[in-house]
Image (cartoon, rainbow, N blue to C red; front, side, top):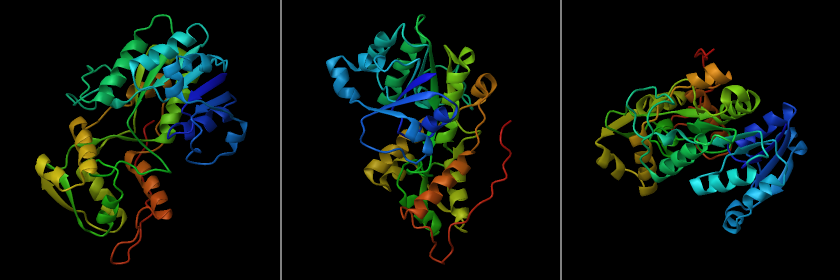
Length: 333
């Protein structure tokens, strides 16, 4: 199958593109050409790379035609963030593609009512990102003459970038504070949740959706690890990796926000009010999705990379180094 991946060098595309090549597909990656994939792989030598500026071409009304000219049988769109963008691409591709997979987000849902949340739960997004992505999903799944499926990843983790940390932001200094046994502040009782997923597990789900189309078409799926993390449990696990016991201070939300840089506080609050906790069972049952990584395993791998690259100081003040953990959690079958 000839597959065009829009945004194929990003977090998920870095894993998805080699997967598709090795599965025997003909892959075309469309990107702005401004960065390399996060990880090297021999499969990239067999990928057709196309440089397109989506925003500029959408302003001209020609992006969809440019994608159609690549003669795709299937399109994976990792980078659609509003309904107008989705509509213009669909109109250009209608009748010329057999499969279209859109990357959504778990934030099409707002705050949880029942956990783990199911795909059938009402959409009640609470920020602009979630509102716009929910509008895209509503438009795409409302089509009766276009073959589409929507995948909603959790907080994507992988080698090459900082994972969402126990304070629900992306400041790597939080890991260093836990490594040194320093105090880290958390909101309320630290029991709000975040749901990580390894980038390769997300890529697995995209590949499955493309290859098991009868089960995927017309549906949406959460793509997450087998279980969410509480902020407190996450912090305690990270401290333990450095041979420390977490020193945690619990504060009311507004006081907690004051302990952080405004950017970190904004990110933390956004994740706090979502407190994401979703179920992967629909994707498992219908697509055969099998997440290889737990949330902690995914973070551990990313943190190992950050320490190796000097992005996080991996030694506690008492000289203890980062501990390589052998996880013995049973994976979902």
